[in-house]
Length: 89
Figure 1: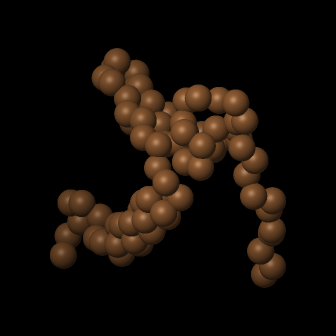
Figure 2: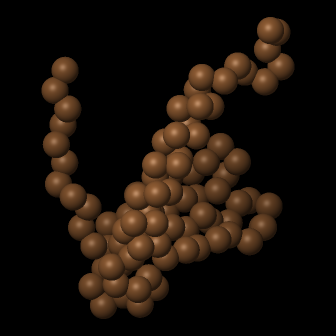
Figure 3: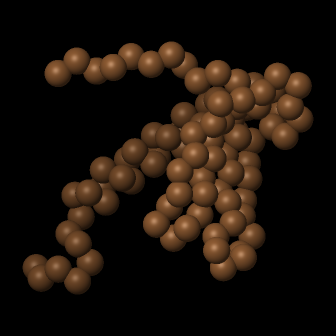
């Protein structure tokens, strides 16, 4: 199977998805001239859920973003290998 190549994301382009508990997660770099995230950083925004609880935002360096991505992938792999909660042993 051949993997599809994709152009790197452009500044201002964001990946947005909704978690199962209703939070919007946005990841992206600022568009030219934007002041929300300092230049050369990756913005991570975990949005407000339906219950009105506060969301969180962080501007990560590229090294920090890579460490976060590696940690998430490692934890996701471990979660897939773990027995389901409440499963009989």
